[in-house]
Image (cartoon, rainbow, N blue to C red; front, top):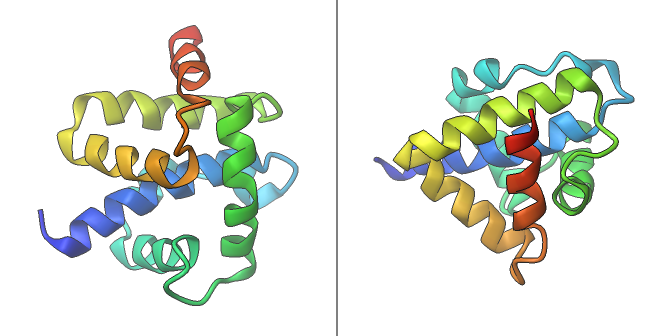
Length: 127
């Protein structure tokens, strides 16, 4: 995979987690994992924001704020639709080696002490 593709895949994980967490806002309630997967330009912009290498939109700043909460609670306060989106993404990660590597990088950044991974695994297997 090219560096751009890897960055896009990493962003997908970040965007998926953050967007599904913010169930109180209408745009995130309608978040589609597939729509993010299909738009590398959007993925790259959010990636730069989340990793602190580029400017952030309002949504990007909200994402950065929400990522730790989503990891910590395994999406406990998410709407049912958002939980389904997160499960869909995480299940895809399990079977796609490129996404799996990107997911690992996200976890290393946002869960360096491996505190929340068991909870996320349980969350994925519940649905």
